[in-house]
Length: 446
Image (tube, rainbow, N blue to C red; front, side, top):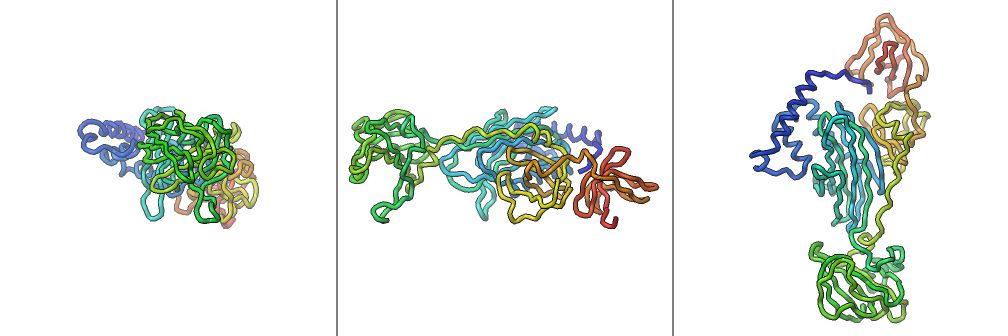
C-alpha cells in the first residue's frame, strides 16, 4: 500500500525492451503464427524478447491469468470507472451470465499520460475446461460487440499493456440480436411464453405469442429465405431460414402471407399479416413466433429490448478511485460484485485499509493489502487523509512497505517517534511519519 521509489534506469531499460518486443510482432515471425487476439500477440512478444522473465513481465502475465478466475460477479447493464497503476500490473474482470440470442456490447475508454493499448477479451467459462476466447477488441477499436450463441458464464477481461497506467471507463450492456417481428411493438406485448404447458401438459409451447390487431404486418427478423405453408396447429405459417446463424424462424397463425412462393427477404421485409388461423381460431389475433436450431429455442432473449444505457458513477465516487481508504465502522463485508449480496464473507474490522481500484453507481471496487478484491458501498469507507490518532513508537520500530513481517523495511526509527495512525490490517497499523512517507508497523504487542 505504501508508495515505492521508481528505479528509473531499470524502467528505461524495460521500456526499450518493450519497444523492441513490439517490433517482433511484425515481419516473418508474425507470418509464421498469427496470434488469436491482440492480447495473445502482445504476450507472445514478451516471451520472444524474454520480458516475461522479468518481475514486471511475470506480474503482468499472472494478473491476466488470475483475472479469469477472480472476476467480479456482474449484472448488466454496468458502467465502471477504474484506474490502472503503471508500476503495478493489474486487470479488471467481470463475470457475466449471458443468454443465447443476446449481443454483448462493451465500450471502453482509456486515458493515459503515455499512448498505450488496452486489451479487452471475452471468454466463455465452462466447468472442467479452460476458458475459451470468444471475442477481442480490435487494435484500433474502443467498442466490442459479440453475439452469444450459447447461454452460460462468460468473463470479460480488461488489461493495459506493461508500464501503461491511467483512467479506464468500461460500459457493458446486452442488446437484442434480432429485429422485433412486429414493428412498433416490443417484447412487453408477449403474453404467452416459451415452455408453457399446452394440451393439458401433452406438449410445451415452443415460442412466444405476440398479440396485435388482425392484419398487423409481421416482418423478417433477419436476412434469409422465407417459405410459406400451412399446418394444423399454425394455420398459415412462414418458415424463415437464416443461413448465417444456422437457425429457422417460425411465424404462425397468420391471416395471410405476403407471398405464396419461396422468397429471398431482408430483415424488415413483410412476410405475412397477424391473424388467428390454425388452432388459434378461438383466441384473439396474435403472432406465434418461434426459433429452431436442432430443437426449439426460447425466442425472448433474441428480441427482448436492448438494455438501457447504464448510469455512470458519481464524480464523488470516481474521485475516490486510486486512493487509500479505510472502513468507517465494524461489520462491512466485501461483496462479490457491485450489485451482489455480501452473504458468506467475513466482516471487516473497523478502520481496515484498502485501495479503491474502480467505482460503479452501486459500489466501490476495492483491494485489501493481501490482494483480496471485492465491492463495498461508498458510504462504508472514508479517506485516510485525516489521521485517526497519534501513536508513540519505540526505538528500533520497523516501518514496512506491506503489512507482513517479511515485507521490505522502509524505515527503522531511531530514538522512537510519534506517528499518525491512518488505519490497520490484521496485526499491522498504517502510519504516517513526520518526514512524509507512510508504511506499516507491527502493533500486535502495543
